[in-house]
Length: 548
Image (cartoon, rainbow, N blue to C red):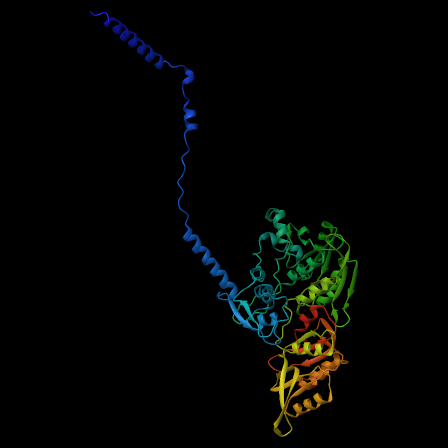
């Protein structure tokens, strides 16, 4: 064998052994090199959910449809809105009742929304010829829900009248055996049965085709009125007799001003034995029979029994000077407020067959420190006869007052016009004159001249008068009364000046000014005054007075 091959074979053996050693060492790697499966999971890249392309076309289409719907609701294209053009003498309350057939309560509830839609700052001063958007078929859901009479549940054995409640003239039946008497009702049942059903607000006048609703009972109306005088009537515990709760419709239980309780015997059915048992069981109770006298006489006894600090019958409250408001109430009492901040005056109206006071009047009295509590089955009266449009003519130079008065009368004035006329019967000799204003009413043209009355202009105006023009020339020294009288005479409007009393039954308004009958399409009469007043007078005078 060749000597040079031996080293080569040796090298081959050495290389083979090294390879075997390396293979064994890799199969038995130390633990520090092993990977934890949790580390693999942590190190694994998170799978991202592929994003879908956004539905841009769908979103744009929805936005566009929403904008279209909003524009339709504002511009009147919506079927829920209808248009109405304001006429002279119109105001929102009259429009909603006369043109759309709403009741008083529905009109009052809708007026704020009409003002919001049409951006109106006043509900009584409307621009003649303006088009208003009126919601069609809009009603106040809370008012509609409240006007539904609450039907009391059928009487259960726990609310039956016990034998002790029989009239004294009628013999009492024998008492049932002890085992036949049902157990006393629970506290929750007593509290529920001791109160009359919740009363709905005064029912509005029914229109043709609507079912008539029964009027609220006397006990219900009494409880509703008394809640306005002594709050927290709900905390009065029920009264039981013979293990039975007294029915509230026949025996309303009222909380007195001094904390005691008043049990009203509406039908006078409590005999002497029943009264004695009640007084022994409830020492703080006072029993008051309804009696046969009128309701006002009965209510007088009720107020005295309630121990109010001060009671005044038939008071008259007068507010303001010119205009002056006089309110005639049935009672005025002084009571402590619920928060204990001191006494307050409450005006009480208890004519159950008469109308309630207008809402603006009640709010005005409340602002003046008087709270109103009333018992009435009718709404405030509404007459189709026009009332009075109370307008204020502010002090100003005579010509400015004339311009303001023309605006109040809804007469359109064309300023700085050229008027031509002829010199007598010679039609070829004509002249022209610039006037401050030109307007037309009743088929006649009128000129307003506020300039100096020199001899040349005086001659031209006399010639224009001969041609049928009416001339209104306020002088610098003219006051409110003089300017108004000149203009009314020239327009041939019926008018008078003085102090007028407008009687509305429960209240009376006295005002000094011009009473004017406007001509044209306007049916409202005008009261022109030169002193500002509370807006409530303008609202109240919109209705025709009951006393002429």
